[in-house]
Amino acid sequence: MLPYFPFGQRYNDKMGTTPLLESDRLVEIDANYVADVTLKRQLLKELPDYYYQALPGNVTAQWEVLDLVLQNLARVSPESFSLRQDGTCWHWKNHLLDEETTFMFGDETTLPLEPLDWVGRQVQEDLILLAGDDATLVAGQLCFANDWSLDEKIGLSFWEIHAPITSIVEPMLRAAQTFMARLPIGRPVWRTNWSVKISNQLDMTSRHTPALKQQLIEQLPTLTPDTIGEQLYVRIERQTLTRLPHSGAVLFGIHTYQNRLADEAADPERAYRMARVFSTTPTAMLDYKNMTAFMPALQMYLGSRQSSVDSH
Ligand code: HEM
Image (cartoon, rainbow, N blue to C red; front, side, top):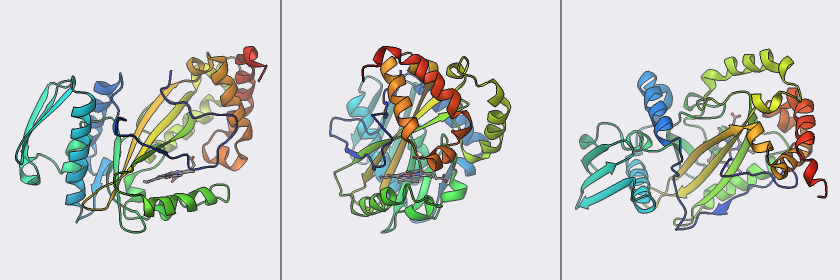
């Protein structure tokens, strides 16, 4: 089952940000850790400039991300990670991958990669850096994006990143823009985003968009209420936003979780809540999420799964 299930009684047009507590994980380790990190490293090896990009002048922020992520991992998962700091000499042990790294904090020549690129390979999250008053995307390691890529968004402000902005999400994004500009140091937040996909491949960066659209067109005739549960996947992003204390940049972390629709809908309460949210989601948003074509079959399917919660 998905660890986050952001479906309530109806479509939510609010930002949905919640404080990230001191005890919460900034980055999360799940059962797919080794497979996901291995895939990430493979993608970065094949197309390094597609999956990692950094504009000049953000080295301080990159070290801050490395610092935050390593400290957080070592604190919340001491059985899997350990960090020893002898002055500026740091010793990092990743027990899950059986790797050890020693480097001088702040000295890039002692790491094999730029700090953000290196630390991104320790976690399942995509890590994005935004800087300046308009929250410009200045650096990122982005392997598991849902339908976007660094090529398209690097150098763009928060507002431009979200363009074209439809009238349904405009109020939410105006609030989010102000929120981003004012996010205080030491008060990180998290939120979730959902979609329903035809594939469970993690890498849905935009270079795969044409193939995924084609796959949907080809599978569409077979997406009936009887089969759709086995063919679709619920994809959830757990997103965190953290203001970095020295550079003032914002770290945007994205952990992608997914599960087969049938596994989620096996719980009648979950089936009911998905049906409620999808039936109240504006048409333009369903179009944007590429869900319109299978919506009738999906709703019939969810209707057949929720009989035991009719009392709602
Ligand atoms: C509170 C913060 C944020 C809110 C409320 C927000 C909201 C949204 C909404 C409503 C959508 C479109 C619909 C959907 O999938 O639900 C979206 C898409 C997107 N968001 Fe955000 N977002 C936030 C932060 C960010 C940040 C920091 C980035 C930085 C890269 C970002 C990048 C994107 C991208 C790339 C898309 C897809 C746009 C496209 O289709 O090209 N978002 N966001």
